[in-house]
Length: 173
Image 1 (cartoon, rainbow, N blue to C red):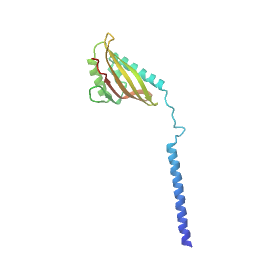
Image 2: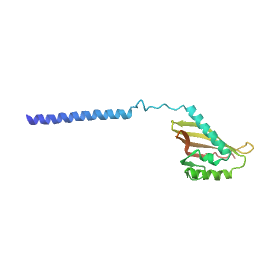
Image 3: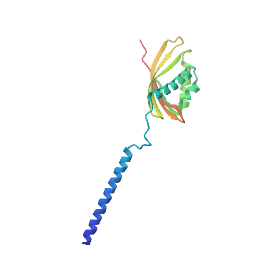
Image 4: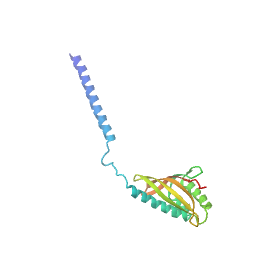
């Protein structure tokens, strides 16, 4: 009889252990999948986000049109990657600044560039932006158009470009 009760005790303990283990993992799984009230974040206002990014692009255009390479480079993070039209990727702020200097030297005098934000979406610390580029000569005639995408990250309370890519539209024939 004693042997039967030992086996029975072992089975009961094993069953209780299994039940407790299953309940614990179910509770753990629920805590992983159910949002915690203090972790739920509200979605940012899309119109406000787009306006904020357009302000950055307007400041970018001002620096671009005044040929201020130092101000343009300040928009990029030290670890930024830029993917310009018809050239290899450029990595790092110093390399991007060097490319901007070369680009500025080739631009026609009096030409201007405008950046129009089409869409901006993301969260409080990361935004992806898409937009159009319009380049005009000194008389105001459009000489080229293009499109771009930029990824912005908020670092120390300031938006900074960490990735960008742009390319020209096909020229009219």
